Length: 326
Ligand SMILES: *Cc1c(COP(=O)(O)O)cnc(C)c1O
Image (cartoon, rainbow, N blue to C red; front, side, top):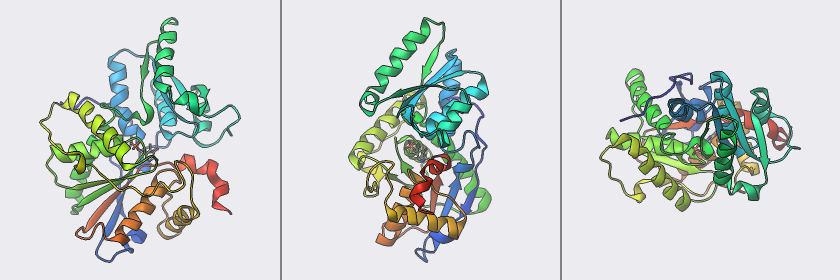
C-alpha cells in the first residue's frame, strides 16, 4: 500500500516548455517540471519526500525531527521549515562549522529555530551514529526524536516522487503531451527511486534517467536499488527489474560535489538569460548541463518529449554569488 502523506507542498507544480533546452535538437522538446515552486520555505524536491516521512513521524508520536546535511543543505532547511510549521523541534547535524556565513539555507535554518550541531567532514561519515546518539540523549529530556536520513532518501522518502510521477501522468492528460523520458539530478537517489518505482508499478514504460552530481554510477545504482527494496516493504508490489534498468548518466560531476566549473556557471547564466529560469550550481545546473550534452551526444535519439525535474536549490545559489563573477 502507498503510505499516507501530509499535505505540505504546493502541488501540483507546473510543467513548462523550455525554449532554450528545446533548441538544442530540433527533434526533441524539453519540458521542465517546476518543483522549485513547491513552496517558498519548503521549496524543492525534499518537501515531497518529507510529506511522507513526517506523516510517519507523526504516527509514531514524535516531537522532534532529526536530520543531516551540509551547511547549505536544501534538505536540512526544508526539514527545519516543516518542523516549525508543525510545532515540532528540529535538530540538524551539519557538515560545516560555526564560521560558515549565515546565508541562504543556513540563514533560514536559524530563522526556523533549528537546533544546529556542526560536525567535521570526518565526523559526518558517522552521521547515523551521531543521530542515533542524539535520539537517546533526547529521550532523557522526554523528547521523542524521529531520524530522517540524508536527503530523506530511504524507503518512506521514495514515495515523494512516486506520488510526483502519478501527478505527472495526470498532467500529461490535461496538457495532451506524453513524456517519453524523465530526467532528474541524483544526489542521494530518492527522487530517482520514486520516479523509477512508480514507472514500474504503473507500467508506464517511460525512460527514467538520473544524472549524478557526486560519486559515480555504481554507487548510485546500488543505493537506488536499496531505496527501491525498502520502499517496496511498504508497497508490497510484485516488482522485477535489473540493476541495468537503473539508468544513471555518469560524467557530469565535474570538479566534485558542490564545486562548479566555468562551463557549468556559464550554462546557468545562459539558461537564466534565455529562459528566465534559475538552475542551482550544486544539482540542477550540473544535471541540466549533463542533459544538454547527452542530447548533443544522441542519447535521446528516438525520444520526442523529455521532462526535466527542476528540483530547486535557489537558496544554495545565493551564498555562491562570487562564483558568477559579476
Ligand atoms: C537533494 C537535491 C537533489 C537530489 O535529489 P536526491 O533525491 O537526493 O537524489 C536535487 N536537487 C536539489 C536542489 C536538491 O536539493
